[in-house]
Image (cartoon, rainbow, N blue to C red):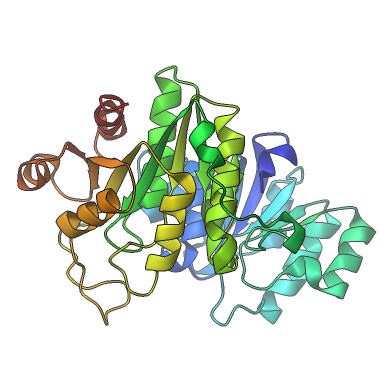
Amino acid sequence: MNLRDHFDVPAQTIVLAEGKFGTTGAKTANGVVAQSELFDACAVVDSTNAGRTAADVLARDDVDPVPIVSSVEEALENNPDVTALVIGVAPAGGALPESWKPSIRQAMQNGCHIVSGMHTYLSEDATWQSLAEEYDVTLFDVRKPPEENDRTIADGSVDDLDCDIVLTLGTDCSVGKRTTTFELYKAAQDAGLDAGWVATGQTGIMTGAHRGVAIDGVPADFTSGIVERMVVEVGREHSLVFVEGQGALTHRAYSGVTLAILHGSWPDVAVLADQPDRNRRTHPHFPVEGVEKERALVESLSDADVVALSTWGEPDAERDKHELPAANIYHENGPQDLLTAVCKHL
């Protein structure tokens, strides 16, 4: 999916994050507000944080002070020309809460396209389809996998590309792979490099990746092939391609997806994202195996070298510990330092 083809970038947007903004439960909303090249957030809807700003809740100086309001109605009153409503929370159980439905209808009636990151697909519901036709808007379900006739098996076509490919992997889930990928891409653009990027999750698609699929919804046989096809498409348009990874090779719950992305993208180099003080995984049944084991697996299962570490810790300490260039992307010049380490090996 390439949402850039459907919107005048940046598109003015309301972000729905009711009850969750600033938490991991709204990481899609957080990412869209903080980083999206595609959407310009005019308001965040979260009644529990109404009256504050996005910069305040996210505690980030580099985020615009987007107002947080209590309802979609209030957001529309203040921003009547918005073109999209982004649903930035995946509710527990995947179903659309009844309390949200009137607000979404109101946004559609106001001419807003609906961009949803939920597990349930609005575009397959007859009621929402009818409303979309009535109000002449489009329903975008970014988690929806490609149709059967668009699924492909990996065939090695990525080997024929002339571009450089950089894959961001990690030692666990939620350690900053998407954010690292995006910040590397932005740093490359700022440095005048011809860069593009590929997303493998719904948040990356919404922040403006040049191609993207929520890879966890793709049947296993086709995962590496779909990643390969996206990398090939972006690689034909750009000389440097950054690819977002998922999970970790050492994570027993998600390693299958991680390996498929590694093999589908077949990178020249890899960057590892790590939170050094994390001992138990986001799934607490398993321990975090750490940088050295993850690095060894990446390098043994591909032709790529792990050339840098994106760390939540202190870069100097992590560099000395792992004998890898390290940078914290939230530090000043962190993304640039990480990009320097990557480019040294390309």
